[in-house]
Amino acid sequence: MTIHQISVFLENRAGQLAQITTALAEENIDLRAINIAETSDYGVLRLIADQPQKAASTLLEKGFILSMTPVIAVSVPDAPGGLARVLEVLAAAAVDVEYMYSAFGQGDGKAYMIFRVTDIDKLVQALQGGGIQPVTGEEMGIH
Amino acid sequence: MERYYQQEIECASREQILAWQNERLVRQVQNVWDNVPYYRKKMEEKGLTPKDVRGVEDLYKLPFLTKDDLREAYPYGLMARPLKDCVRIQSTSGTTGKRVVAFYTQHDIDLWDDCCARAIVAAGGTNEDVCHVCYGYGLFTGGPGLNGGSHKVGCLTLPMSSGNTDRQLQFMVDLESTILCCTPSYAAYLAESAIERGLRDKIKLKAGIFGAEAWSEEMRQDIQNKLGIKAYDIYGLTELSGPGVSFECSEQTGMHINEDHFIAEIIDPNTGEVLPEGSKGELVFTSITKEAFPLLRYRTRDICVLSRKPCSCGRTHVKMSKPMGRSDDMLIIKGVNVFPSQIETVLLAQGYAANYQILVDRVNNSDTLEVQVEMTPEMFSDQLSQVAEREKQLVNALKAMLGIYAKVRLVAPKSIQRSEGKAVRVIDKRKI
Image 1 (cartoon, chains in turn orange, purple):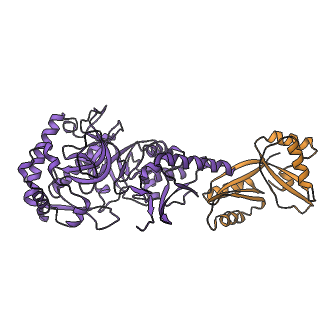
Image 2 (cartoon, chains in turn orange, blue):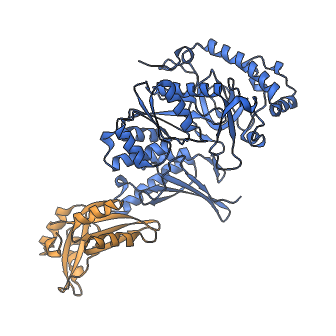
């Protein structure tokens, strides 16, 4: 049910991000989602790749510091109120969300949201209770 | 079972050591008076003649020598022997100002090698060992000193010199080096590189003798753990001979000064007054056996403490603490004395690597201090708030240690340049 997110330490320096995307491109790795949280000096790059293990080993070889984080993906109707409904369900169940971000559209009229929570089971239960099924890695084209 | 290179000297009674020092000091003062006009003039200015120094208790009367004197007297002004009696020149790695050169007779080199041999035996070295020396060879005293000591002990000596890490590791594995001699920062780099290349289990090292730069207790632990060795400190100055002025024994609680060759004093760096035993102050040395280049009361600029507490190793020579900083490495930031070693201690205690750089600048007439630290896998998290929290803890710990605010900048791994000799830790951009 969970999807592997790769979190990479990013020094705030010209070319750091390009170095990462180039390294992944050279290995023919496709990105499904990308997000950056930053301070003025450094940031954390979070990415979902179609081949998580290969992406991680590629970046480790380049000397990057990273960690693998389990996250949950949810498909949201690409229409007004789509995300609001999901968040209402989570609020009602008092699920604590560490952070969330959107994934690239799959061209199927749906948007995907990635959730990082401390308690994954609680999140999944809350979603299912609200009639929302988390998206599997396969559905997002992740091997 | 503790082993010694020269047991009768290293474990001599205090009375015996003092008797040697008294006799040799009196002879050395006469020698300098007769042969070094530069110092004789300094003595005359103080109204002194050799008769005023009857033993160690009169040492305090003599004038100091500083690095400035060595530069002023460059190159031959402090020699006590004609050049034809000398066989070697070494020079400081000094990065500022004029270099300092030191001269050696063959006898001087023999005694210097003995001092280094004592250090190697104290670190467990025997003629069964392969001694891997990757201090620089050349004008720098590190390579030649440990090389000479290693020969005296009878170790199989690998004169690697510095640099070319891949070759260092290959020889270390293929020739089964057991004792490593280099700067602590290079030892840390070798350890890191060995682990990266999967060579950690193929290395047969048992001990390391690391000196020529300041390193903290935490850095010692780090090197010991990564290489699976016992890491010994060694201290010295080109001006006095080179490495081996003092060295650590198995107790690892300070370095025994070779008192049969050097008399140590601790002074107040501001007043020049000799401080009682156990006080923290500037270390001053008098070389009492050097022939070619004898320095009386040479101010090292190193801040440390001397201790005569009995040592479990059986050696009786006085111990000096690791230098807590140098009065000329000391940074004055916003009026506060800051030693790079203090920053290193905090970093290691907080779980960061010993790869760091200190940037000092002056912005709008106010000093700024920035510490660049490499991120490590252990300190990283996908949650920015946790990384920021750890960063804040580090800022607080630095503030507690230094008394002033230091900006922390977390940088990418391996982005701070590794050094193969003395690490460049401080970049002071202030134009004062």
